[in-house]
Image 1 (cartoon, helix red, strand yellow):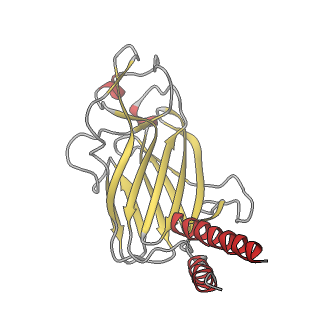
Image 2 (cartoon, rainbow, N blue to C red; image 1 turned 180 degrees about the vertical axis):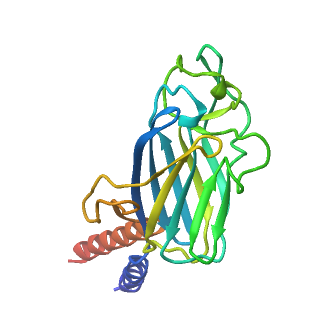
Length: 245
């Protein structure tokens, strides 16, 4: 009988934690601008007081900086009181005039975030008022071994983030039930071109139209850990009971 108390405690903890989750939302944009083809994708994950954005450029051999991703805008259904950029990660590279790639030293430092507290719109950008001052750098370029088409506009804005940049925002009031809408991708240093985010479809979510979502709900790590603990205690309890039997 000594297993009953921890068993019930574990089950209660798992039950209480089962409401914690994160929503994963995927958006895409493609089109063209004055510098050529444009294409990008973003995965936005909302969880307790946090938003994580994986922002990807899908143009693998651009000609101009105007084809690199420089910002994303979106709105949250739960209007937050603040939004702060807490981390920026990704692979930084320098692109030479002949298109060859070398690793860049340092960290991603030029991105910033702005919040419109009246609408809940968040802007994450490296080119614009929310970005660090000075010439825009750290734009996102598509993944490739080299960039033979790159002109001088790309070289002079070294370094670039290669492939995907991951940005973590502290956003009090956001939960795993917070929805994301009105997604807009921006390209170039102006930014030069904007494209609305659309969805490609997915199980268990809405699809279609600008700013709608696709993806799913996943448990947060704490929930998974508690579930594992509960299952372990249940297994130990059953083993002890079988031995007594």
